[in-house]
Image 1 (cartoon, helix red, strand yellow):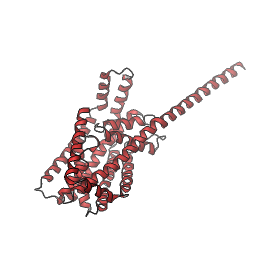
Image 2 (image 1 turned 45 degrees about the horizontal axis):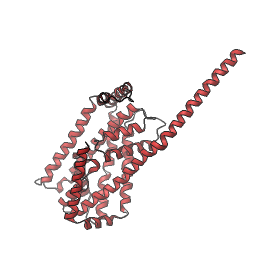
Image 3 (image 1 turned 45 degrees about the vertical axis):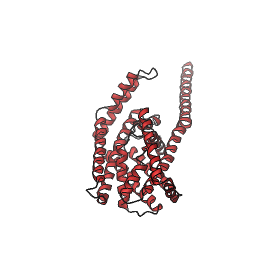
Image 4 (image 1 turned 120 degrees about the vertical axis):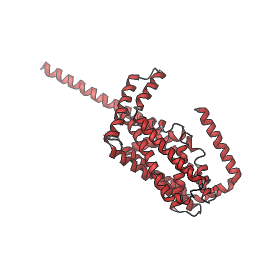
Length: 353
């Protein structure tokens, strides 16, 4: 995996060098300086999208723990998304981190099952959004154009990936994962505990799809709403770059961009697909390729801000929250032990009387 990741990084660096040499780094830099403080607006817009995404995860949790605050759910989600962004884990690493971060308040089997359901709801929400975006804007591209059929192929791939993910979830995936963990033979891992958690997570997963279809629908709608903020960001950036913009263009750029990112989901940090994809799409629509590349770079800066916030939330949880929870649990246990001792002494005193 490390060799594959190194290969992708090398390809990305080569592409960036070629693009900047061909189109001019000065032009790209000029476009970026036009945005200025407008970048803060995109960061704030992303905050709204991530809050809505967190509501999408919240909708999948049937018995929500009363001591679990929404801000903790939000912090766990952005932490998991940060892990997904910097690693080629196809979202598996980030989902595990989300469940692991909340394990003291949201039982691990429930956490694993709900993040899996939420990931499927996010994929379905993306497909619904892309469908709407393409229906509204695809007329901008002639049917004879090569890009037209590439879009159809990318959309088919996105649907196939979502269907495959659902199929895997129906086959008790966590039980297969614990068997893989058992073969690793880690001395510190209690295999029996892992087996029980995996079996319970599979039961929660299957039960959810059997009894909570309305919750799944609500979660999907949350993700559709979050994805719908993407074209607004594209529209804002185009206007800040002094380019003519319309909602149809913004929808088409975002829709095709998401298909490109979905097709290259194994590549960490959206290398090439972010900047190159936006440059390609906008160039085909008659815009300067440099403006598309600049939009990709600006989006990457925005995403890196949220990656840093996500990693910061994980660090705070590890260094501050977890130790505080351990102290609180130890204090509660000590108080309970002291109360038990007092009850015993009281009972002994009553007997002596």
